[in-house]
Length: 199
Image 1 (cartoon, rainbow, N blue to C red):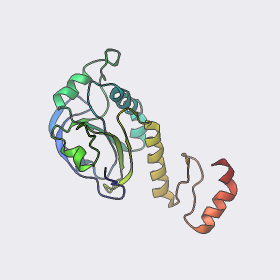
Image 2 (cartoon, rainbow, N blue to C red):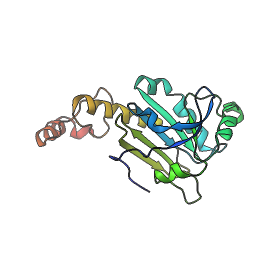
Image 3 (cartoon, rainbow, N blue to C red):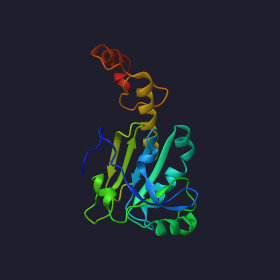
Image 4 (cartoon, one colour):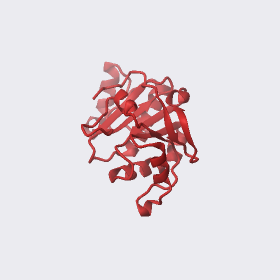
């Protein structure tokens, strides 16, 4: 696995099903440069943990939109399989219509470029937070049985926004509205004098 944090996001062009159900053959990640992006990989359509994660992202799209974040899902399935899955209601094991694109990594090139290939040839459960400059600022990678916490990604977006706006760093367990820390010895001492016992 590669650690890509601080590096430019590997670009790609691939087929995808868009949020409005349009199928395109030339979805390009770098077209979103200038916006924050959450790019997440999952193993396969029509499986088990995957729909719960995709719906968890879908149910938080208002929050992602409010924070100016584009969300993109990727798996090795074709755009046609993605589209078929979106046409099945969740109560029947599908997704229903979801509010973000699903990209078809049928030749496995995208997951290889992100270094998150499972030994069985599918993608690990990997998520990447990409900033407006197309730099990766956060990544998390889970093995296949372990579903992600999408609220943690929202927290990371808030932390990135806070740091970008105020220049301060975000200590352990930081949430939006909490105090930040100046990245100096005095800043650390000041923060710990108030919060060390609560960490």
